[in-house]
Each structure stands twice: as structure tokens, then as C-alpha cells.
Image (cartoon, rainbow, N blue to C red):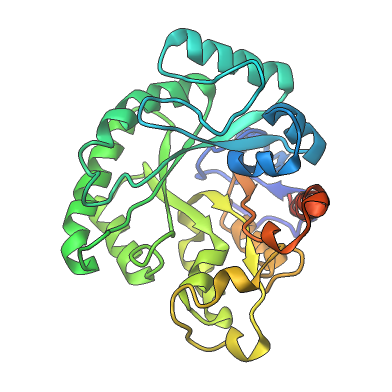
Length: 321
């Protein structure tokens, strides 16, 4: 296939061979441009001060949302004064599907916590087994997972992490569902561990939820993290977008993990991570799901400013989508 032409920030050429992920998917054979969905974690919606999740999404101008799922398949962070959301039953799935259609938005990813931890390796297979067919019915292509050890060293944890992820991938066989490991902990912010995990599982149903900020949070120098984005970009199936602004003297040195993070957390339009550069890396790798906002800096602002901060962050992501 010929090399795609240079594209605007608002469009990219979808080439054959990529994963068909997210809303706005266009068959590669048409060679038509597609847009990324701009979304947020459902927890962010409560910071808008709006009465329900759907009003909050409209206020922010979002097209999608990542929805947290509990073991009983409840959606605790989708809020409404008169409704509760749970996808454990066909009626619950239909109710949420109808709501999404009425609101004109999509779920870009489900979020399951701690699927690969040593305490949860087996128990999380049960909700995942139930969630995969739900994801198919709702057109959700990515399920975010955490793969982190609480007590074990990475070397001792890796075999059980590989086993757990293999079991998850078996659940997704024959579907378009992909589990996206987030680089979220000490283990999965280590590129060597991530690479061994992906190689050990060896399945197209295991990808990466790229949190561009977390490699930096872990302590890697700023100039180094872009290489990690490039390394893993072909595996990215979902994203988290947040940032931090360290003093200049700390940006390109190796720092301890979580070094004064909350004190220096910042909106993505003011932080150290260059999301235009991140977007260019993902676009080159034919990434096709969402840019998902995850804000951890609102404590720096008065409550009256929270909505405006979030709107400015969404505006930046829209300019890249």
C-alpha cells in the first residue's frame, strides 16, 4: 500500500490491517478519513456539577465515555437522579443501549480493575466472561484492565499475569473485543515487563491502554517517554489523557515513582506531555479508538472553575481528533 499522504490534525487515512476500534470506524477499503472519539472516564463527569452523566457529556461536547464496571456488572459512575445502570441482565443491556442511542454517544471502553493482581487473577475471570458478550452487544471494542502486583516482584508476578491475560484473551476469541492493559503500576510502567507480557500472551486480543502521563509519573525522563509511546503505539487500543508540570530541573532526569505528582499535576493544555506529539505517534500507528480525558488536577482550582478547565482540556483533544 502506498504511504498515506500528510493529513490534517482532524483526519487520518485508515489503512488496511488495523484493528477496527471505536465509533467512527470506516472500512479500510474505502480509504476514507475517520475521526477519533473524544471521551472521558465516567468519574470525570461528576466534576462538571451537572445533574446526570448525559447532561455532563453534552456540556463538555464529548462523543464517548469509558465506563467502570463492578464485579456484578453495575456501572457505578454513570449517574442520574432517577436511573441506575447495570448490564448484568438483557434488560439492563437494552436500557443502556437505548440511552446511548438517545443521547448520541458511545462507550469507548469498559473498565475492569485489578484483573491481573495476585489476589484477583481468578476471580476477575468471572465478570470478564460475562462482560465480553455485553461489550459485543453494545459495540464496545476495548476493556481496560489493570495488571499489577501488590506484593510480588515483577519477576515472580509475570507468569501469573501471563496466565491471567491468556485466559481473558480466550474469552474474547471470535469477537472484536480487546483487553487493554493500562500502564498503571510499577510493573506495567516498566517497558521490559510490558514487552514480556505481550510476548508471553501472544494474542491479538491483548493490547495497551496507553496513559501517556503514567510513564512520566513512574519517573522516566520526559525525553524518554516518547520513545515508549512509539514502541507500544501499534498495541494501543484505548487511552487516558492527563498531565503533570514538573520544575524544569526534574523533567529530563530519572525521578522516584510518584515524585510529588499531585503537587505538580496539571491540565493537559499546561502540562509537560506534548499531546500533539502523542497524537502524531498514534496516528502514524493507525490507532482508531478514542482520546479519553482523565483529570487529576482539579484540586488546584476552585470548584467554580472545574467545568471550564475540563472544557479547555476537551477542546485540546478535539483539535487533535
